[in-house]
Image (cartoon, rainbow, N blue to C red; front, side):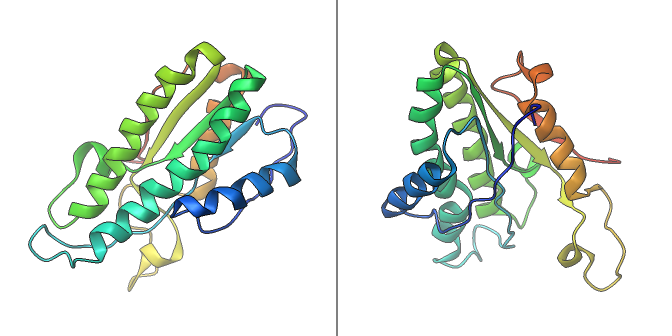
Length: 185
């Protein structure tokens, strides 16, 4: 985070276009927006053959559509500022998905491609767009059964530090990147 900025948390359902009005209202309440970070979590296991019909669109709605609709409003605001940063939360699965993660992997890969497109579109407006690709978050639901962190985990504050660099003045030359945040791989 850049010096002198405050951080706010905007929550809500961003999985459909009608949520755009809510995003605009939230931005209006906050005032000038200099950066926007999405944090979208969730994993639903399933192969191509076993993924239920609702799991595929649900995965895309949660992990891609929410980014799309929040970015739709942020893009115009940051473009007018001629400065800013967008950081999209993705996953290491976007680059190297494995068996049993079909919908998750494809939706996160789409978020990385969206990052690249937006980076190109917003470069003339001096808005940087990047993605962070954590392996596994070190949070309670991921410690199921053992109470211990699984391999290749990163605590949320570790991811926050990477995001802070991407938003900082030191991060200005980075745009269009998919930053791996794998912890002790």
